[in-house]
Image 1 (cartoon, one colour):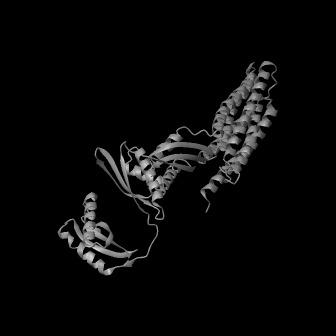
Image 2 (spheres, helix red, strand yellow):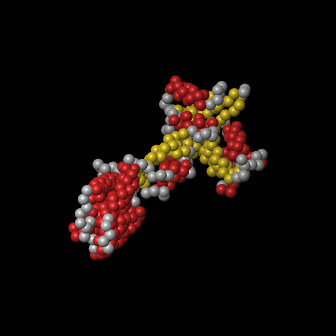
Image 3 (cartoon, one colour):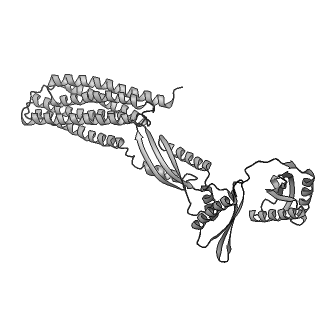
Length: 469
């Protein structure tokens, strides 16, 4: 099955090749007419079409090169070849216009050669104008379908031929009427028609040159940057679009975007946000997108998120964060996990540096109390204690009479790890309870169990809604 890229390349090449064929036919017709009639207008048109032929060949070659994929030496592909081709075509147009203007003033001011206009020449020019019109429309359609600066330039060339040929038809018709009805001065309309052709060439060439220069200087299309920034700002997980840069090479855009995400976001969350940004941009323009992510503190960042971000930046695991107003000042408490092989001096240094940074990030006078505990990276063996497991489960299931929020306790697992008794279990509760009340109840249950079974070192309760237990 033929891919979309292969289809685009084939259509562009066929359009460019058709342009070459049309240019050959037009050059032959207009050179023959220029020799047969001696008309400067037709000669200028022959020169114009000759340059069109050169431009068409350049366009065909540039389209073949521009669609080549990127390689080790051309990392952004070969699309700029089309822009360079259009720039060369612009220069050729302007050179032609200068020659036509010079020759026209020579004939108007110094000598006027004998013209040999005829109806046959006028008919052939009308036919040439029709060829120009058909090829211009065909090239423009392909250039719009597969954005191509080279084909667009070629389409402009043929469109200038339509108007310039029309002006020449007016000039040669006036000369023919002057000779047929012996009206003096009408033969000078041929040189004036040539000046009209030159004016059309300069006007179209200046438009094409400005457009081509914008492409070579990586000028972003008007409004595209704003559309991209607005789409990125609406992406979930993105705080703000900080920078957008757009450049174009051939029919493909290259977009560099810098976005900010919450600094507490995980690497996976930041990556998911950048992928969403890429998809949004690719829905606007066919683009190769590079997204750079900057971590930023949201304007409404919670105190605990600020502390977690500080600890995360230092690579320090923290938990059990709490904050209280005590004696008119903010008191922050947290648990810091350090390498279990670290000495007290090293662990205290890490805690002190973390405390100092928290002080700088919070309100003046904040007190910070950090509890240091081993990270527990080592995975040790465990031995299940079944008899104690049944006793703990029976005790927990006797408590709903005192605590109505508690409905059931199950999956009680008791094991011995490094001579310490650890217990975990699931407790079913009313799913509509606020999480603060659930936390208070689990803390109370832990106290009751450890009071009943002093040998237990730690109890971990997993609360769950009764409908899911």
